[in-house]
Image (cartoon, rainbow, N blue to C red):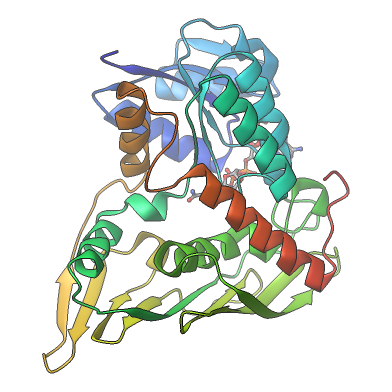
Amino acid sequence: MDKIRWGILSTGKIAHALAKTFNEMADAELVAVASRSQASADSFGAQYNIPNRYGSYEAMMADKDVDAVYIATPNSLHYENMLMCIEAGKHMLCEKSFTLNAQQAQLCVDRARANKLFLMEAMWTRFIPATVQARQWVQEGLLGELKQVRAEFCVNLPYNPEGRVYNPELGGGALLDVGVYPVSFAVHWLGIPDDIYSFAFLGETGVDEYESIMFGYEKGAIAQLAAGVRFRGTQEAVVIGDKGYVRFHANFHHSSRLTLKQVDMPEREVDIPYGNGYRYEVEEVHRCIKAGKLESDIMPLDETIAIMELMDTLRAEWGVEYPNE
Ligand SMILES: NC(=O)c1ccc[n+]([C@@H]2O[C@H](COP(=O)([O-])OP(=O)(O)OC[C@H]3O[C@@H](n4cnc5c(N)ncnc54)[C@H](OP(=O)(O)O)[C@@H]3O)[C@@H](O)[C@H]2O)c1
């Protein structure tokens, strides 16, 4: 398989970013787009030179030219969209948050595995060159034993009770929208925590609007995390070991600048520019599919499920429920 032939589900904001990405990649071919409306599929298709344009998500499933589907719908739809793609025998890259809860995630993963289809959560942070560099420093032991992670993702997103960020029907809330980044970041460096402490403020629509989360690890590590959608905060992260630390400058989830500080050595600031940040996760999908792998070692499916479990626990503590989960 020289080229992976992609279909995109939805014509929303992030669908545009990935359409551009697929068109820039030599081993990707963007062959189809599906929208709830034919007019939107047609105009999106015209903009990105996509030959097959569908006015329903179901219609694209019958397209034999599509090897893999990029799922870019609101969080509440990922579950049914993945099940539909699995039924149709398509590989998948699914946007974060992967599903509404861990039970849905487990079912999608079980079915994808049973049907021998590739599946990955689109957690692009893990594939950004700065993250790759930091991972190398950690593996080389430059930071020593990891003791702390601090990560904050607070943004000011316009309040719209009907929109996907604030609407519980669409899986809204700060945790599933932006909080998944610090949670996934902490799990990436420190693993699954043994204890969780948290506090969240809920808004008028009943979803969490900002929160502070602490993970405790029996091995002697701590993660301090924050997320929010009502006001702008910093978007930095630090990974701290007993021999040094690495700071991910804003925005940590797609950082292009790191500071490395090792004990008894001066700070070293390193710029790692990367161009289009979405292509690295797509490259991983291509690598895996071409190698016949069903999942990524960098963003493994069991870890995606564990992250959903953590977010279930947090939401249960705060009393945030979705009507359709
Ligand atoms: N990786 C990243 O950097 C990043 C950034 C932003 C968002 N995301 C994730 O990507 C997903 C989509 O986010 P987005 O910002 O692209 O959202 P968006 O601009 O609101 O687009 C979502 C699209 O989903 C489709 N859709 C289907 N049912 C819908 C419904 N009931 N209400 C609204 N839209 C519906 C629509 O496309 P059609 O009308 O064409 O069907 C809509 O344009 C979310 O899971 C989000 O967490 C990731």
